[in-house]
Length: 199
Figure 1: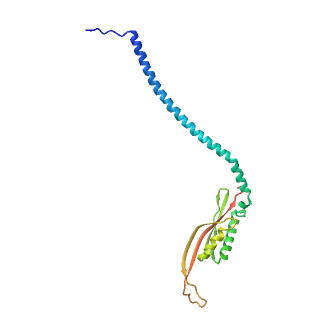
Figure 2: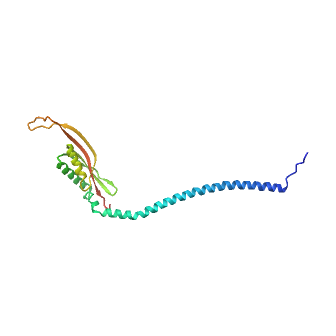
Figure 3: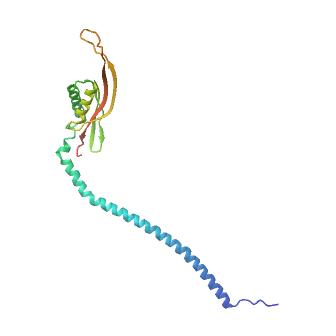
């Protein structure tokens, strides 16, 4: 039978050094891995921030030419002519109603009604609109729309609603004609823009 001898101080110190070396290796691996992941995360964030900084610098560099362009547009008489010339929405609405009436009568249509709508602020302008009801034929409808949208200042036709019905006209003798004619009932909005003060 062999006798078991107790390990000496040298063996104990060797085992302790080996244990410390293994623990240090594990700590180095865990901490180093965490640092590498953290470094990569911050490196990607830094790249993203540099890209954003370059975008902002490009935007800042283009700001001055854009402001000069805006100033030249504001001073351009051709642009100013596209706005309604009146100073207040009620005056512009009344003028708009007169324009519509003149156009409708010039093409042979019948103006049934006009109604000013409340003004609406849109950016640096005020939209002034009039609701219109007209009766006429297809040719007069085409001419009305063309005449309104080709004017200066710019006018816009929206919410166009057209219904048609066939009618037979009465002769001076009181008898109805043998043919029918299509009559359109047309409803739409006409709008233009006023410049706001300082706009």
